[in-house]
Image (cartoon, rainbow over all chains, first blue to last red; front, side, top):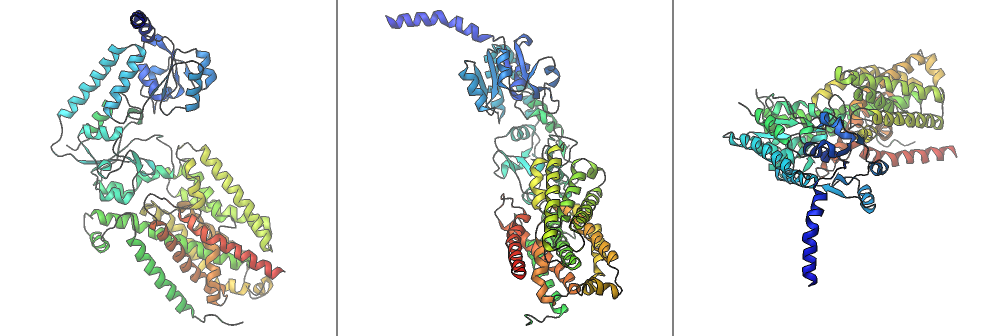
Length: 274
Length: 335
């Protein structure tokens, strides 16, 4: 009897609760990565505020679209005054802030940092669901899949050896977006083959011994100088790649996982030796 | 006074050079990946050198050469400074030349000038070293005792290090702040032949200026007045040595960061072996400094890959206790 009642209640409540969750009207994002997905998927009217980093053209793929929205600096006072019905954050966002906002009764959703194309798809799906924009999410994923498939169809017979090289000698091994993109574009990622997991420094002797044919880099602060960045101009790097210059891929294409990874894959594919 | 070791200058320099040559070869053998060295050396002569040749000529050789000339510079300048100021605690590290040089180099590197004009980097180092050295000299006064000199050096060092921190915090590069430790401790990892070429002219010029100062320094051991009556012009000698130190230390530190204690320790270790004669000490300290820094860098490279220990950490670990020992010894004399 009580079970029946429970089910009826549930049936009765379900459309109501899903409706209210379907289209949150005051969404606030406090992380660059959630900013961008929010801007891609939400109705403009749904967006209350995005983080100030979304405006930075070097790291934000959606910098232009971000200009029309008020920005926040992830301060609790700011967030409270916005009266959000949904707060979007990354797994690595300020823990204390997230806990505080949850304790105050706000809905805070966190997103993982994807390290694969599947991770990107699931983030888009999660975001679309939270915003009640499933159709747009599907559309975005379909577009990205189509672009990626087009490239994977034209794989070179022999995959050339590549390596991603960053200031301080950092490289991207297994479980990184750079690894996924290099593979999709038709390159071998030497860092992954050397057993490097994630984002780690590689010794220059080990790098040379692997004999990369092409080096890629994503300048984070182009135009600035430091010893870390000076390392990229080591003459041995150019000599080992037979004089080929290091190719720069925009940082904003993969600092956050998103459909813009297709741009990076296309750039990597275009730079395959002819 | 008993003579511990009666070595002629030739024997001493010959012996030290042999050790240096052995370390030089050894350091080419040691790297993160084992490579067949003789094959590599042979391959460097090919039109399109192999990868192992590239590792030898573009990674290991510059590192070894930079350690060698930086160590030699620090040892030589330490000996010259101790001779000139007739003060056993004088050295590029304690007198502020090294941190001044690091400050000058930081100004040039992080704000874009060095990328426009590579020689701006050693120029900044030279200017910084000269200003810091002169400031300490003026602060301490001409006939300063050890204590005054050290205190003036501490003040200028603290000032330079604070300015380095400030500048690196203000620098536009997001990587700058983490490099504070690099400038304070010094490192010779990850340098290229281009860096070696940049530091070379200033260093050679400095060495050249110091070569002829031996006899004046010998005369100076008899006292300033005696030296003057013997026909040596002290103001000229002083300027010559200060400028030489600025040129050599400034150029070296602008590439490696401030590496501590070599200029202090090496002349002390070798002084008994050259009969306390400054003219003989100069060359011996240069070779000795090269030996010490090369040995320290080899030790650093023997740590497992990934533990990025700065070579300056090691020289300071050896040098700081030695510095304490010198202070205790000089206190005993005072009592």
